[in-house]
Image (cartoon, rainbow, N blue to C red):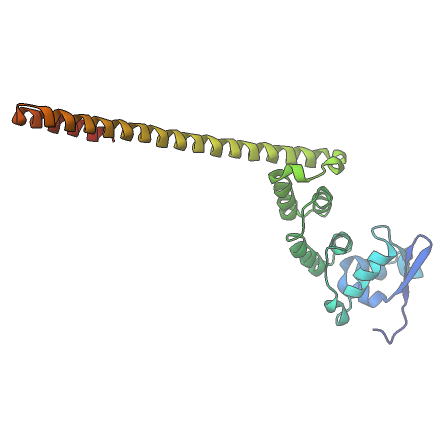
Length: 223
C-alpha cells in the first residue's frame, strides 16, 4: 500500500490527510458505500471528518493497515477516540478490540456516555454499575446533558444502597443472635454452679440428685 500514491483526502477543517481509498473501503462498509456510490466524496475523492481530529484519525487509519497496523497498541490514551471513530465508520473488529480494552479501563461518566452513543449496551451497563458502586469517586456533571443516563445511574445507586442496608440488617441480626446465645450460655453456667453448691450441701442425697438432674436437663434446653 505504501508504494501506491494516496488517491483520496480526508479533510479536517483547514487540515488535510492523504489516504488510500482502497484501504478504507476494505476495512469499512461506510467508506465502501461512500466511494462506490455516486456521491460528491466519490467524485472528488475528498471527504470531511467531523468525528475526530486529524491526529486521532491518523491513528485509526494506521491501525487499518493489514500488516503494520496490527502492531499498534490500543492504550488508555487512544481507546476512547478509537472506539468513537471505529463505531462511526463501522469497523467492527476495531470496535470489539476497544470494548475489550475499555472493560479493564477506569470507569468514568464520559466513558458511560461514549458507550451509550455507540449503542454498546453491555459496556454501558458495566460503566453504570461501576459508577453506582463507588459514587463518591466520580464526577456526574457530564451526565446532566443526558438525563436518561443520569436517571439510570441514580436507580442503580438506590439498588446499591438497598443491598447495603439489607446486608447491614442481616449482620445486626446475626450479632444479636450471638449476643442472646452468649447471655443464655452464661446464665446456664451460673445455674449449674448453683446446683453444684445445692447438691453438695443437701442432706438428702438421692432427692437432691434427682432434683439436680431435672434442673440440669432444663438448663441444657436453654443452650
